[in-house]
Length: 144
Image (tube, rainbow, N blue to C red; front, side, top):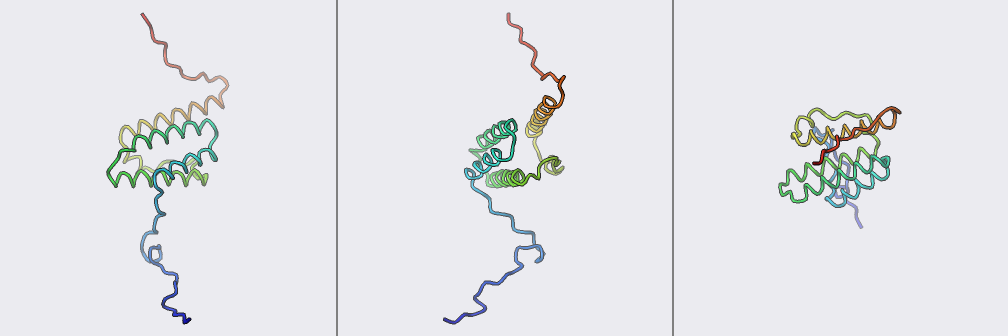
């Protein structure tokens, strides 16, 4: 059997930064495998309290986006969650600040969700570190 050198695979610079192109992003996982990967990453890398909070958030977001038909929204949703999974698995997320461009693109509802998440994280930290901290409780409703 003759081997033709032109038929053998050779490394190329197509799709890399050296060719002047952006690096090809990793393939997107389908929704269900990504959902499972996220829950596994939480189970492996987060403390139990943070895991419960994160798992509830993932479940609600995937439920809310279950009926989305717009391919652009689907790709954006899946790619952001896949990047989140990579960050959690790599422990690069601790102490990292959000990119300003991402915050600028958020809707008012998303910013409200981020604020609620920030408040719950701060409350948890206060409960752990401040012995005099009393958790915020809503005022009792008056019944007549």
